[in-house]
Image (cartoon, rainbow, N blue to C red; front, side):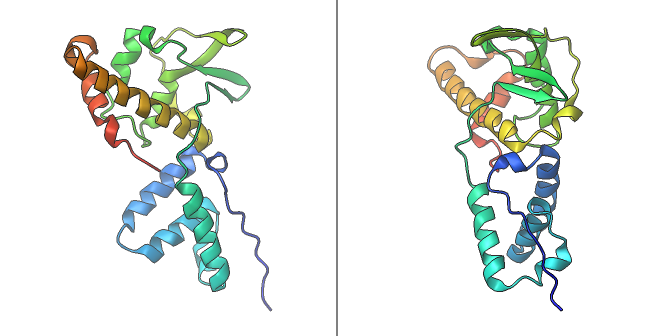
Length: 206
């Protein structure tokens, strides 16, 4: 007797956490030369389908799910979220990047690039800090004190992470362009930020 199986197919990035995404990307790299295996990895990580179930799906179901997954994975029009609530605490994105604490710039510069990888959660912890005051569209966040806690960002949905990544991808690309037209980037950007900006044109795409 056939067993009926319910498969939930995500339609946007809000259904995927950073933790799930990193596990997905790690396995995906291991099978980069095998299309069927890559599809199985997508089903397993994004739809929570046990690997042994995949071969039991009928062809139409298999192809339709794969099409839906590929469609949503290619979505790049993800807006920036200025505020994120984690465990009842509201976090806000650095409200004035031009006045970001030097210590925050220095800590971000320790990472080789701004990309969705195993260090990304720590970058988010630097950029987003608890909101201390909020009036209309204006707000303040906790002063940067060097306390980096990336773990709390691991279960935040990927629409938040990707929205931030795409925002900085565009911002940093424009900054590189502007600095090349005016002053040497090394004269105006703190330690090692220049190399990060130069890599911004090759940021990891989902």
